[in-house]
Image 1: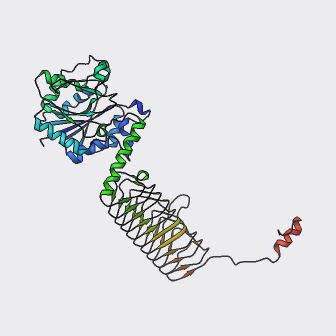
Image 2 (image 1 turned 90 degrees about the vertical axis):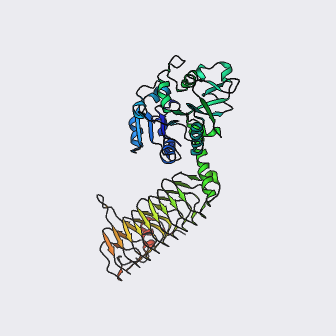
Image 3 (image 1 turned 45 degrees about the horizontal axis):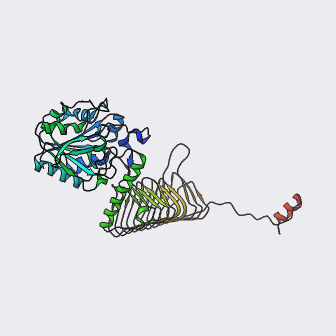
Length: 466
């Protein structure tokens, strides 16, 4: 392809979203809507220039996309799409090549379609190429008006179209390829004498025809690709389409997904083959999952690295953690941020781990809290064990060295260290370091008061319950 610059129009507010958030920042499968056309330009088309025209909440949009490859241009007054593109003229400068104009609220367009459109435009030597589509219900879109020969005559915006023109089902999608040399020359001739008093970008089609310039069209292979998002309902519909694309991709790569409609996988997730995803699972952010894993049902994993052959069982949540090979987690486990679980460890029922390293082969099978801790190799953490890491002002670390046996209902009051091979008796509260291979027990002596219940019955007038 020849040199390519991309302009993305993202200045509108999106009133029909009924939101205090500008439309292009609404999340779509875990990412702002605007991230989709930006990714196409930056990562796939690798455009020489990527320019985003912003207006409403311009600062918020710029803060959401901090990338030196992006140039933001502000359209302070929203005077139409033609005016928006005109704002980019100082940035485009003397660029010679093709300008691809995209919309920030059309996130379903594929790289394949845009690549083929640009190639078609350049092969045809056209001044303008429109991406068009056929829609059964074209309401809201500009109509492509053609001559009897089939050539494009003009684009009629819906508010300005006649009744006959509104019956046409071929629409202008708002996506264009335009010769840079022609674009700004044509925009200088656009007028705002229309129903909305705006400078319409599609008007450059008639200008091109008057100047005997070639106008071409390229049909979108699937109308879904050019679906614009204006409402919450359309946002939800687009998210399901994107989600299905992601699921289909991973199944084609060798991942099994049970009850696909209930599984949510964000585009930034990576999954290796022979992994099985069970129903009602949510895989988010920069999560990677290795080979042969079993995930779910009802599991959420976010921004975490999962090794090979890992089992993450029912109702488990993992965030910003690293899980090594052959680990079993769950059911009903919670791994908060900055956890590392080493090879063949087990984190079981109702166990919460936070900012801790769990060594290879270590087991915490039941009802435990491990926070701000370093746990060694082959440690057994008994049911009801708690690391008391917070003194009301500061967090402190607990160190449990290799081969330690921690009895049930143990409280380890940090900062504290339990030496290699030590044993802690059930019900013990540890407030001092435990030497290696020592037995640590801290209990009061058990005392049984004979016939206490019967004596209490005489005082209260109530005997023992039968």
